[in-house]
Length: 58
Image 1 (cartoon, rainbow, N blue to C red):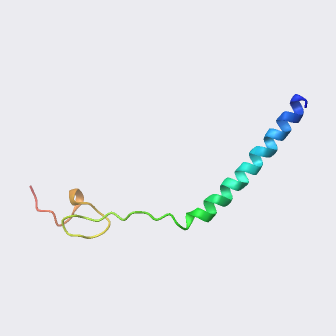
Image 2: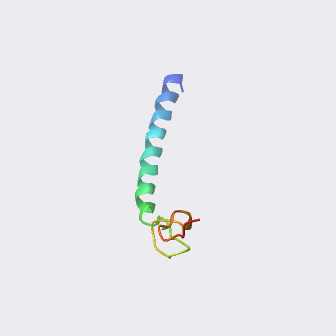
Image 3: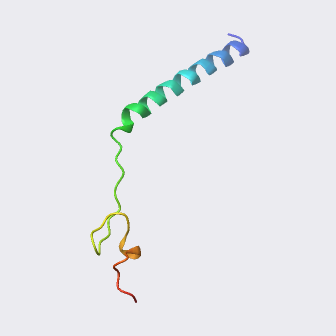
């Protein structure tokens, strides 16, 4: 196998790997869930206790 043949084969394998990676990402994307941020002071979503608008002034 010549160097050009090896390069061509490597490009083919890389292309195939990229296709497989894309398909796996599509299949697994439905199972990925983002964790919601919830405030420990007021229990509302979207902010933390540090940035809570109901937090008493210090």
